[in-house]
Length: 227
Image (cartoon, rainbow, N blue to C red):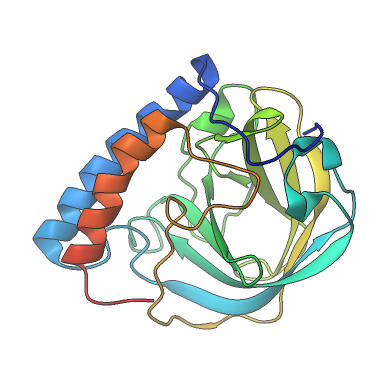
Protein backbone atom coordinates (compact mmCIF):
# COMPACT_ATOMS: atom_id res chain seq x y z
CA UNK A 1 0.00 0.00 0.00
CA UNK A 2 2.39 2.35 -1.04
CA UNK A 3 3.50 5.49 -3.19
CA UNK A 4 3.97 9.22 -3.41
CA UNK A 5 1.10 11.53 -4.14
CA UNK A 6 0.81 13.82 -7.08
CA UNK A 7 -2.34 15.63 -8.09
CA UNK A 8 -5.52 13.69 -8.84
CA UNK A 9 -4.34 10.44 -10.43
CA UNK A 10 -5.33 9.48 -13.93
CA UNK A 11 -7.30 6.23 -13.89
CA UNK A 12 -5.05 3.32 -14.81
CA UNK A 13 -6.27 0.35 -16.72
CA UNK A 14 -4.88 -3.15 -16.41
CA UNK A 15 -5.72 -6.77 -15.74
CA UNK A 16 -6.41 -6.28 -12.04
CA UNK A 17 -8.72 -3.35 -12.66
CA UNK A 18 -10.58 -5.15 -15.42
CA UNK A 19 -11.01 -8.36 -13.43
CA UNK A 20 -12.17 -6.42 -10.41
CA UNK A 21 -14.81 -4.66 -12.48
CA UNK A 22 -16.49 -7.85 -13.68
CA UNK A 23 -18.14 -9.07 -10.46
CA UNK A 24 -19.11 -5.54 -9.50
CA UNK A 25 -20.69 -4.87 -12.87
CA UNK A 26 -22.70 -8.08 -12.73
CA UNK A 27 -23.82 -7.42 -9.15
CA UNK A 28 -24.63 -3.80 -9.92
CA UNK A 29 -26.83 -4.67 -12.89
CA UNK A 30 -28.56 -7.50 -11.03
CA UNK A 31 -29.37 -5.58 -7.88
CA UNK A 32 -30.28 -2.43 -9.79
CA UNK A 33 -32.95 -4.51 -11.51
CA UNK A 34 -34.07 -5.92 -8.15
CA UNK A 35 -34.50 -2.39 -6.84
CA UNK A 36 -36.63 -1.51 -9.85
CA UNK A 37 -38.95 -4.45 -9.18
CA UNK A 38 -39.12 -4.16 -5.39
CA UNK A 39 -38.91 -0.36 -5.23
CA UNK A 40 -36.73 -0.88 -2.16
CA UNK A 41 -33.05 -0.82 -1.36
CA UNK A 42 -31.62 -3.67 -3.52
CA UNK A 43 -28.80 -4.70 -1.19
CA UNK A 44 -28.29 -4.64 2.57
CA UNK A 45 -31.95 -3.78 3.30
CA UNK A 46 -31.66 -3.97 7.11
CA UNK A 47 -28.68 -3.23 9.32
CA UNK A 48 -27.23 -1.38 12.29
CA UNK A 49 -25.75 2.12 12.25
CA UNK A 50 -23.41 4.09 14.46
CA UNK A 51 -21.12 7.08 14.72
CA UNK A 52 -17.50 6.03 14.30
CA UNK A 53 -13.90 7.18 14.12
CA UNK A 54 -11.29 6.26 11.53
CA UNK A 55 -7.81 6.60 13.02
CA UNK A 56 -4.74 6.61 10.77
CA UNK A 57 -1.84 5.23 12.81
CA UNK A 58 0.56 4.10 10.07
CA UNK A 59 0.56 6.71 7.30
CA UNK A 60 1.36 5.66 3.72
CA UNK A 61 2.06 8.95 1.89
CA UNK A 62 3.36 7.10 -1.19
CA UNK A 63 -0.21 6.07 -2.00
CA UNK A 64 -1.15 9.58 -3.00
CA UNK A 65 -4.30 9.49 -0.86
CA UNK A 66 -4.43 12.53 1.48
CA UNK A 67 -6.45 10.66 4.12
CA UNK A 68 -3.63 8.14 4.52
CA UNK A 69 -0.72 10.56 4.18
CA UNK A 70 -0.43 11.50 7.87
CA UNK A 71 -1.57 10.35 11.29
CA UNK A 72 -4.99 11.65 12.14
CA UNK A 73 -8.49 11.05 13.47
CA UNK A 74 -11.50 11.33 11.17
CA UNK A 75 -15.15 11.18 12.18
CA UNK A 76 -17.42 8.99 10.09
CA UNK A 77 -20.76 7.23 10.00
CA UNK A 78 -20.88 3.42 9.83
CA UNK A 79 -23.51 0.90 8.81
CA UNK A 80 -23.20 -2.89 9.22
CA UNK A 81 -25.56 -5.26 7.42
CA UNK A 82 -26.04 -8.54 5.59
CA UNK A 83 -26.31 -8.20 1.81
CA UNK A 84 -29.50 -10.10 1.01
CA UNK A 85 -31.07 -9.73 4.45
CA UNK A 86 -31.53 -13.51 4.70
CA UNK A 87 -32.84 -15.07 7.94
CA UNK A 88 -30.08 -15.62 10.50
CA UNK A 89 -29.56 -19.37 10.06
CA UNK A 90 -28.64 -18.84 6.41
CA UNK A 91 -25.22 -17.62 5.24
CA UNK A 92 -25.10 -14.15 3.72
CA UNK A 93 -22.52 -11.62 2.57
CA UNK A 94 -21.45 -9.37 5.43
CA UNK A 95 -21.15 -5.67 4.66
CA UNK A 96 -19.76 -2.52 6.27
CA UNK A 97 -20.24 0.96 4.86
CA UNK A 98 -18.32 4.04 6.00
CA UNK A 99 -19.14 7.65 5.24
CA UNK A 100 -16.35 10.07 6.07
CA UNK A 101 -17.52 13.51 7.15
CA UNK A 102 -14.50 15.47 5.94
CA UNK A 103 -13.71 14.93 3.18
CA UNK A 104 -17.13 13.52 2.23
CA UNK A 105 -16.40 10.06 0.87
CA UNK A 106 -18.07 6.65 0.94
CA UNK A 107 -16.26 3.32 1.32
CA UNK A 108 -18.18 0.06 0.95
CA UNK A 109 -16.80 -3.25 2.24
CA UNK A 110 -18.08 -6.79 1.68
CA UNK A 111 -16.96 -10.14 3.07
CA UNK A 112 -14.29 -11.70 0.88
CA UNK A 113 -11.13 -13.71 1.13
CA UNK A 114 -7.76 -12.01 1.59
CA UNK A 115 -5.50 -13.79 -0.92
CA UNK A 116 -4.44 -12.42 -4.29
CA UNK A 117 -7.58 -13.86 -5.91
CA UNK A 118 -9.91 -14.31 -2.91
CA UNK A 119 -9.93 -10.58 -2.17
CA UNK A 120 -12.02 -10.17 -5.34
CA UNK A 121 -14.51 -12.92 -4.45
CA UNK A 122 -17.55 -12.49 -2.20
CA UNK A 123 -17.65 -14.88 0.77
CA UNK A 124 -20.99 -15.62 2.50
CA UNK A 125 -20.81 -16.07 6.29
CA UNK A 126 -23.17 -17.55 8.81
CA UNK A 127 -25.06 -15.47 11.35
CA UNK A 128 -22.70 -14.28 14.09
CA UNK A 129 -19.63 -15.08 11.96
CA UNK A 130 -17.39 -12.14 11.12
CA UNK A 131 -14.16 -11.75 9.19
CA UNK A 132 -12.24 -9.59 6.75
CA UNK A 133 -14.17 -7.42 4.34
CA UNK A 134 -12.65 -5.64 1.34
CA UNK A 135 -13.79 -2.95 -1.05
CA UNK A 136 -13.81 -5.74 -3.68
CA UNK A 137 -13.35 -3.40 -6.64
CA UNK A 138 -10.01 -1.59 -6.97
CA UNK A 139 -9.88 2.16 -7.43
CA UNK A 140 -7.17 3.97 -9.35
CA UNK A 141 -4.53 5.77 -7.32
CA UNK A 142 -1.06 7.21 -7.83
CA UNK A 143 0.27 3.85 -6.58
CA UNK A 144 -1.89 1.72 -8.88
CA UNK A 145 -5.06 -0.30 -8.27
CA UNK A 146 -5.92 0.18 -4.59
CA UNK A 147 -8.08 -1.94 -2.30
CA UNK A 148 -9.13 -1.31 1.31
CA UNK A 149 -9.90 -3.95 3.93
CA UNK A 150 -11.35 -4.03 7.46
CA UNK A 151 -10.77 -6.94 9.84
CA UNK A 152 -12.58 -7.34 13.19
CA UNK A 153 -10.25 -6.53 16.08
CA UNK A 154 -12.64 -6.90 18.98
CA UNK A 155 -15.82 -8.46 20.28
CA UNK A 156 -19.36 -7.33 19.66
CA UNK A 157 -22.33 -8.27 17.54
CA UNK A 158 -21.58 -6.82 15.14
CA UNK A 159 -17.95 -5.93 15.95
CA UNK A 160 -17.26 -2.34 16.99
CA UNK A 161 -13.53 -2.27 16.27
CA UNK A 162 -11.72 -3.07 13.02
CA UNK A 163 -8.16 -2.95 11.71
CA UNK A 164 -7.94 -0.93 8.48
CA UNK A 165 -5.54 -2.13 5.78
CA UNK A 166 -4.74 -1.35 2.14
CA UNK A 167 -3.14 -3.22 -0.72
CA UNK A 168 -2.10 -2.38 -4.24
CA UNK A 169 -3.57 -4.99 -6.55
CA UNK A 170 -2.52 -8.46 -5.41
CA UNK A 171 0.29 -7.26 -3.12
CA UNK A 172 0.36 -7.92 0.61
CA UNK A 173 -2.00 -6.06 2.92
CA UNK A 174 -0.50 -3.30 5.04
CA UNK A 175 -2.12 -1.89 8.16
CA UNK A 176 -2.84 1.84 8.07
CA UNK A 177 -5.08 2.30 11.11
CA UNK A 178 -8.36 1.29 12.69
CA UNK A 179 -12.08 1.99 12.68
CA UNK A 180 -13.94 2.24 15.98
CA UNK A 181 -17.73 2.43 16.24
CA UNK A 182 -19.00 4.31 19.31
CA UNK A 183 -22.02 2.03 19.60
CA UNK A 184 -24.44 0.34 17.24
CA UNK A 185 -28.06 1.49 17.18
CA UNK A 186 -31.18 0.65 15.20
CA UNK A 187 -31.05 1.15 11.46
CA UNK A 188 -32.03 4.43 9.83
CA UNK A 189 -32.56 5.46 6.18
CA UNK A 190 -29.12 5.90 4.64
CA UNK A 191 -27.78 5.45 1.14
CA UNK A 192 -24.09 5.23 0.26
CA UNK A 193 -22.68 5.85 -3.21
CA UNK A 194 -18.95 5.17 -3.75
CA UNK A 195 -19.21 6.25 -7.40
CA UNK A 196 -20.40 9.76 -6.62
CA UNK A 197 -18.51 10.20 -3.35
CA UNK A 198 -14.94 9.14 -4.09
CA UNK A 199 -12.09 9.33 -1.61
CA UNK A 200 -9.78 12.20 -2.70
CA UNK A 201 -6.67 10.83 -4.38
CA UNK A 202 -8.60 7.95 -5.96
CA UNK A 203 -10.78 7.55 -9.04
CA UNK A 204 -13.02 4.86 -10.42
CA UNK A 205 -11.62 2.95 -13.35
CA UNK A 206 -13.52 4.03 -16.47
CA UNK A 207 -14.90 0.53 -17.02
CA UNK A 208 -16.15 0.37 -13.42
CA UNK A 209 -17.82 3.78 -13.64
CA UNK A 210 -19.36 2.92 -17.00
CA UNK A 211 -20.88 -0.31 -15.72
CA UNK A 212 -21.73 0.64 -12.13
CA UNK A 213 -23.11 4.16 -12.40
CA UNK A 214 -26.27 3.18 -14.34
CA UNK A 215 -27.14 0.56 -11.72
CA UNK A 216 -26.60 3.03 -8.86
CA UNK A 217 -28.78 5.55 -10.68
CA UNK A 218 -31.47 2.92 -11.17
CA UNK A 219 -31.33 1.95 -7.51
CA UNK A 220 -31.60 5.60 -6.43
CA UNK A 221 -34.66 6.19 -8.59
CA UNK A 222 -36.36 2.89 -7.74
CA UNK A 223 -35.96 3.02 -3.97
CA UNK A 224 -37.67 5.34 -1.55
CA UNK A 225 -35.73 8.56 -0.85
CA UNK A 226 -32.70 8.09 1.40
CA UNK A 227 -29.77 10.32 2.26
